[in-house]
Length: 122
Image 1: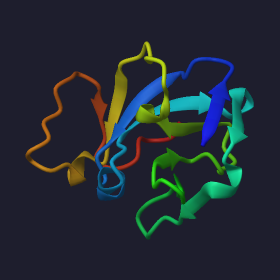
Image 2: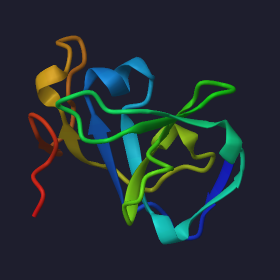
Image 3: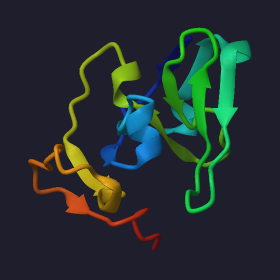
């Protein structure tokens, strides 16, 4: 899987839901779809549909199992796991979501906004 972004991601957010934790990707960088270009590996993208109570599907690489966020979605901006970027991201976490599913052994050690579930949409 290889991609490039023309503009730096705009925000980082950490999801503490059980789905994100289980796939090993919980901090996401949000990128504009217009600036995202998949260079190779499109045929390897598989999608995990959301269960009731969750809004978003999660993509992953069917060859290596890497979590890929929501690359196949249709929203103008979408999350890509921060660990998928080779270069350092010059951002700090802006919010934590699904903190009601966060395990006790994982403390939140920053002052970012916290949401019990998905952040409120304006």
